[in-house]
Length: 182
Image (cartoon, rainbow, N blue to C red; front, side, top):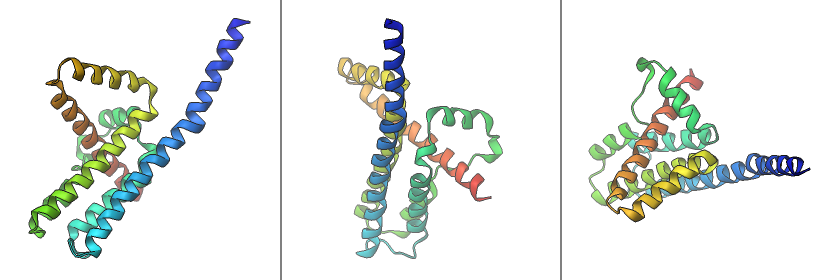
C-alpha cells in the first residue's frame, strides 16, 4: 500500500513538473526576452540606435532566435550538440558579431553599456530557464550558492561558469537556427 502511495505521489510530482512548472518557466523566460527586445526597440525609437544599423538588426534577430527556441534549450541538448556537431558547423556566439559591430557604429559609450546589460539579461534568462526546468541541476546550483557563502572568492568563478554556459547556449541556438533555416 505504501508503495502505491509513493508511486502515485511521484507520478503527480512528475506531472506537475512537466505540465505546470516547465511551461511556467518558459512563459517567464519569454516574457523577459520580449522585454529585452522591447527595450532594444525603444532605444532605436529614441535615436540611441539606428533601425538601419546592422548591429541593431543582428541583436534583434539574436533575441528573436532565443525567444523562438527557448523551450528547446535543455542541458542534455546542449551536451549532445557539443559532442555531435562537427567543428565545421560551429558558429560564433549569437550576439558576438552584433556587439562588435555596435562598438564600431555607436559612438555613445552609455548606449553600448546599456545594450551589453540587456544582452547579459537575455543570456542570464536563458541560463536560468535551463536551470529552473531541470531538477537535476537544482542541486548543483544550491551547492554553488552554498560554496559562495562559505568562500566569497568563488563568486567570480560562479559568474564565469554562468557566462560560459550562456555563451554555449547562444552558440548552439545559432547553430540550431541555421539548421532549421537551411
